[in-house]
Length: 214
Image (cartoon, rainbow, N blue to C red; front, side, top):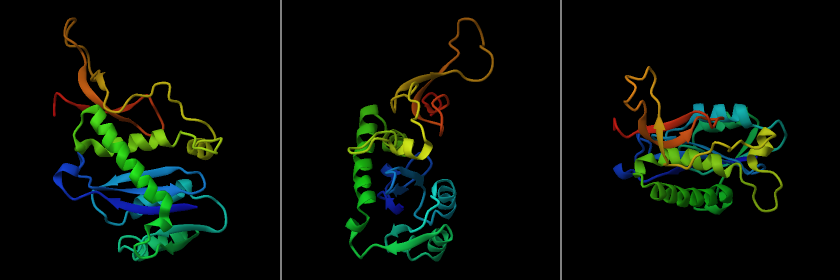
């Protein structure tokens, strides 16, 4: 029983991500408590992302429903409503100025906001790195077991716990070996960078920021 809502960051240059992101879409699954989301450049309807999400995560059961606020990008958009209905969901709007009716997502917005500020501050990074902190935080929170639950959201959806053996701290400094042969015996064949996140589904391949070429 997913619930969906979109959150917009302030349209200011200090909030733009490295690729121009100014907002994110967030989905809260009421049954598993899993959070999923994606940084976005604009508040345009994320039809493609939502369709991919529903194809991967929509449960095969009856009485599925989704809550949308009454904004033009969501509930009032016929493409968004048609997408959820096609996947078997009853589309329900929240009341005007009644964000409490979509409480799980609203609370998650506050938690994510606090987490992003803490992660960026702790790593000493500019706000433009927030999309990577956002993704990293979601991966962490989905493997944590909340009070009264014996399984984490990741365990409930994947049937196993994520492997954090090689997990890294967001913003940690890394030395990355570039492709190609070492130019000589003495030169250091590595580049200094900043760890931003892992590629989905692995802790072996990372996304990093090259400080030398920035």
